[in-house]
Length: 307
Image 1 (cartoon, rainbow, N blue to C red):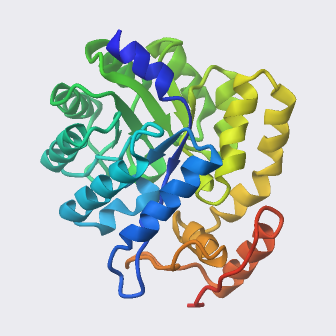
Image 2: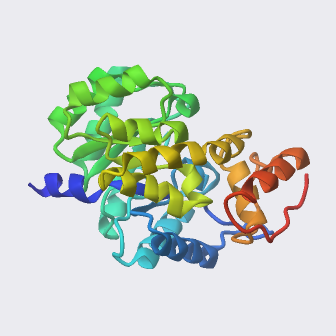
């Protein structure tokens, strides 16, 4: 029953927040608090940090914990908090996931280990060990375009059957056939979240639980409203929002996430548009394109330093 309740609570738009940096590349935790407040006020149904959009591979383990601790205090129980705790290192993943539980997180988002390219057998052992180390809900994060490894549906189904606290998966997977088979094999009550912006609406249509969409960083209200409209039975409104957001989704992924996002947030005056190397801001031409598209959705006030 404990995890059945969590499946109902962890639904909607769980916004994956960027990690703001200052011009000297130190973390700007005050800006992070401001962003979280803005998201809660804008209707985001949950908050996540240190996922792909939060540049976790550019943070030390200690910095990741700092971000998580800052975020859980800023959220203050107003909405569910589900930090990203996965890593290419198994022990680090265990440590961060345990930390998430200790600080009172509502769950943890655990990515398929990247670079290592583990086998399906090894992935099963990795995720089972992580799930067994805590008693908070685990959302597996499958993003083969960034990890070079796709978590097979059969492996995920085995994990969902063997680990009560593996309650769902974030599928950043363009293979919609694979995504359909997740619910067929893991059960229709398994929480399926879209990590592909153009699949947020289609995943709801097949029974998805919501989305963890990078675009929420720029348009939190509209991204949350897609879910709200669908939940309330206003299918046409959800469909209209799906198409309305498409130009914004497209421009925000013309460079590697979160580079366009941070440029956009800089243009909006929300953060200093700073990434840590090896990441960098988009070209001046793309920044100008982002600015033009943003004008359709929000106020534009800040400047971005061209590279």
